[in-house]
Amino acid sequence: MPAPIPVPDILARRSIRAFTDQPVTEAQITRLLEAAMAAPSARNTKPWSFVVVTERETLNRLIFKDAAGMLAQATLCIVVCGEPKLSEYWVQDAAAATENILLAATGMGLGSVWIGVHPHPDSEQAVRDTLDIPAHIHPLCLIAIGHPAETKPPRTQYDAACVHRERW
Image (spheres, helix red, strand yellow):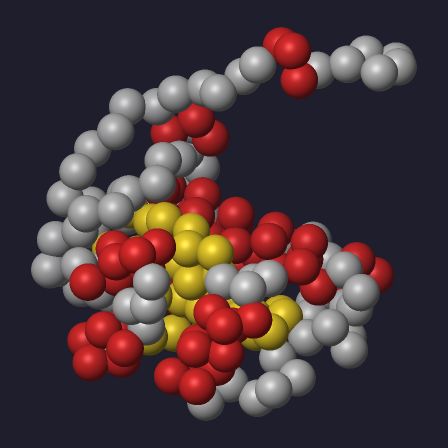
């Protein structure tokens, strides 16, 4: 059995957009995917799939619109996808898998940032075309991952005004 992924203080998870050129290892990629697939899914349908991208040329082709610019420095991108035919909750399930990847990356000392793709049809199609993803599979997001070239302190964004007790 592999060693457990260190669990970070959840407040330490921050969006990292600057990376060194040090590659993420295959063992680290496997651990990130194990974390993703440990996420809960409605009725245990696991409607997710993942595309791992490490080739610089392909990473560069995934840079569309300004939101994906951080891929220019990342050495890894995990594309989180879902299959609506398997579950009407595919978005929630794939989002849970995404958050697990983000937290696992933090626990492993890696940096990461979530880059939204769904529900924008043009963005989904651009990712599909770049990676030959079948039409019935929906890319939810790209996760740029690498060794961080920036540090950010842990923080909370707790807002008591967003909390209601017993009733609204």
